[in-house]
Length: 375
Ligand SMILES: N[C@@H](CC(=O)c1ccccc1NC=O)C(=O)O
Image 1 (cartoon, helix red, strand yellow):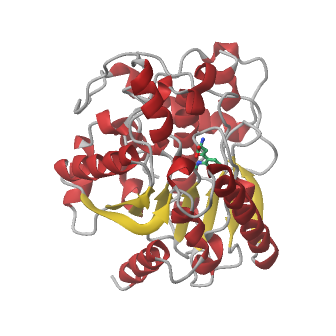
Image 2 (cartoon, rainbow, N blue to C red; image 1 turned 45 degrees about the horizontal axis):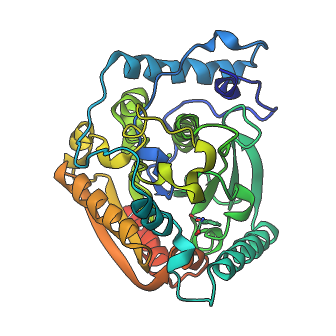
């Protein structure tokens, strides 16, 4: 219960943007974290709140409870394309430890530790540079947790500029918005405002709570975009945000984890079950088990949401398989979805390269924006 309070605690002073349909005509949303597409769990008891939240938080809670109620009133629908076969044997577990250790698959450095070390230094220095060079609005709260804030880059751009939202990875337990601003410069230079989303990490919160909070961030994004343009792609979220879902044009899923059923047993990712994965929520937290039927109507529109799934040649086999399955699943529900296995790259430079304007994914984002502006 304590952890659920984190969405209820008073937020700091910056007001949340109100909900009006005015400026922005579209938004591009970039997604690393699979949390976005996971189903929504029931909220639980809010009665544990001890403090009176400020007005803007109460408003957000009201909005949130709309889809939470809806969600809990419905049973979950799962595509069920994989089986949950329970705890693995020792040899299977050893295989999974490696499959879910992205650094073990990189060929750039002699050891996995060096890949991670380079990555952390790179994302930190590029993000710091962007913070110095670009106009920013930092630490805008969308929720009540210390990390439930966004940083905006390119804050000097016109209010109706396209918006790109980046949700960083890190196995839900590492990294932060401060070191995840490396994609900003090439996009801001081309007139795209960039929003970097922070969120509370495990084990401070469970994965389930993290997912829930990311959806609150999604509502915040859509309200922000409407005021001046995320599909938490589940039915309840769509019902809550309604037509605003149409603001979402492109979703980039980069080296994502779309099934948590195996990694939940690994020490490398889920020591002492720090993610809080249970037999009950494992499938619910796995986008490969979700139904996207409710997005059919969105995808049937001419100007509809497009998905772009990217995975690295030097990601593990399991990571590549999950990406292939995710793209097939989205297509099976009528979504537009392309899949790219990027040659020569690993789990880390597949995002590091977002700092460059001539990178495949950056170019795809820029081309998507240009195409949208011509409409
Ligand atoms: N245990 C993981 C570490 C990892 O995935 C990671 C480490 C630092 C920063 C980001 C990471 N993952 C990003 O999605 C590995 O062995 O690669």
